[in-house]
Length: 99
Image (cartoon, rainbow, N blue to C red; front, side, top):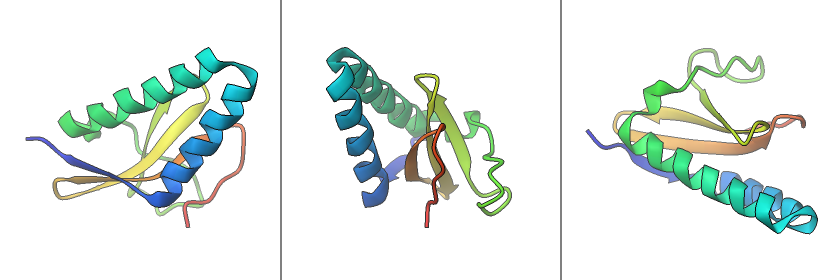
């Protein structure tokens, strides 16, 4: 079974902010982040259940999952039927809200 992946506008905007920030420091780091996000999103198509449940107390228990990449970023997502909804791309060193 292949899952459909939908990235929210907010998650897309968050990713753009992170990539732009990194590009100011290191173009290669920005490219690595972009490539890792693409890899993670592609992996959601095959089996999003490989990723752990998100334990953030600000989110509904048992609904959201997380995929950590490039040591400090994570995609926060949930699965409904055959669709994966990515709600946020977060720098784990910062506070965030998906709503």
